[in-house]
Length: 376
Image (spheres, rainbow, N blue to C red):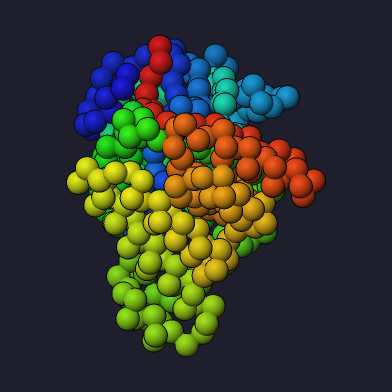
């Protein structure tokens, strides 16, 4: 990586520079992060890039290559509710940086990103983390990767108002080429797990289903509320502490199914980590990917027809395992494939979409890549 960000320390501030942070794909472990559970994402090559410098005027100014007009705000005084829309992720990171006790001045920022928006690949976390590493260097400090991830998460939760867990920001900060980020969200401990698919003749396809992907309808928050209710009824701090035997104590069928997904998904994450850490053939994780999707579809009810069709078609086309990835209600599917058979898998999904008159999905290879850092 190009920038250490390992220890809390002061270093020389910079006048200007270019920083980046990647999007992420989650191999397995969905909706477990806000339940103090386990997740297993990796950082993508797709990234948000921020060119930053101390402001030339009295206010901060941010321009995005993806937006028509720049936005001005005060990084020194902005509070939640002050900056709506896309610039809120930037202003929110400045606010959270300030709230964490770090020095901040007004800044000029130029943003660009090739992380697909609305695909469940954490384009917002990439932006927040890129701004975070830029602010740290501009201020001449090294808060550490985990603290910067927490700052970015706070920006999303409290400034933007999205009730997400911390997986996205931690994956963006801690990613490493050729590795998965095994995260225990209870204490934010990270273990890097080798994931060399090419050595086994495999490839992981990321299939953007082009289905509408939004949490604005409240479904994400509703699932979180269901999980919190289940933990309360079981008398537990979080569903991380529940066992399959506990599920029978939940009287409400919906709440029981929500809890069952979280409990079994945590087990699946740990099983995948065990397999990959002990040198097993990555093909062995295929059934766990499949089981994860079934659980999201039937117990957590967060899939949609575009997603289910893509998963089924990918399997019929020869995928070793396939599942939805991300928060749900649209977004992306991942398919673990023989490298020699990716064309058949893509063709099967495209054919299934064409038969339904749907827009063709976008497909790319998911390659574990480095986390946030400085480019120049």
